[in-house]
Image 1 (cartoon, rainbow, N blue to C red):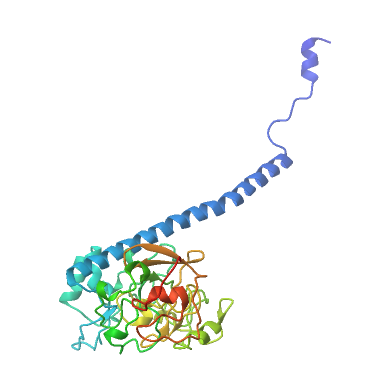
Image 2: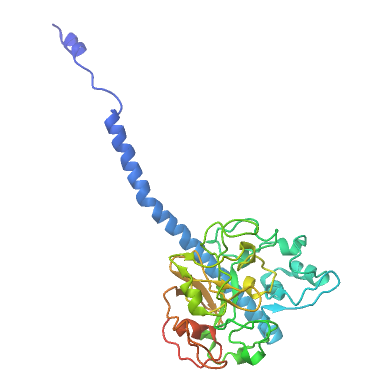
Length: 344
């Protein structure tokens, strides 16, 4: 037998992968993807949270620039009282006078030239959802309130829950309110100790009716009773009637009613929301950021506030001009309560 014959009779080594080897490779890839995906998601959320923080900084700067011009902060709800088409009832939100300070001069000029009632779903300026007023982390639907643009960012009412439309200037606990005129000199607790803006997520689904689920939802009950409001929300579920989604925080950026545009510092962030829409409410801020919400303070700085912040006694009562009963969180909302706030 020749040498060449010997070689020709030898068994050739198989080429490629066996089925078992292929399955092992697929399993390894699946494990790597499972390990990497959370890291990718966390990186994306970190980027969104950073963008959200930058939005707050820009709004804080805009509010300071507004104050430099007018010597007061804009009200969170103001006029005019248009009656030619239908009564506007001083329903403009504080974002409308702020438009020139966030590079939206053309929109402001259009609204000034031809103002109309804020629930006019056919008015082009109201239909715009401005990126400057929205957090990238909130996956909001395209239409909740008949096409009117939406917002995530909210003005602080402080730590009170009643008579939103009838308080005197001296009774206002926060920086904003119905036809308010608060200036830096009125913030005796210190600008770095007083909340100015925070955020609120919108409930899922589109149009009116009850939310598709209760994440971001609110109830219509217990709007002046913080303890009962808190007790009505257990493990992410309300035991009381839900507010229609198109009347929730953030569903009309142009509407100055408290239920759309404000937050309160009564219950800790990401807890129960008891929204009376007009004159009362426990308007708790919320976000899709893990563990809390972002807050822009009156000095323009932005802090992440834990949902576990000390919120004091929900059954407590407050006195105008006195310390808040709602712990550190309530003290951050009051502008002149005289509280001494430590680390938060």
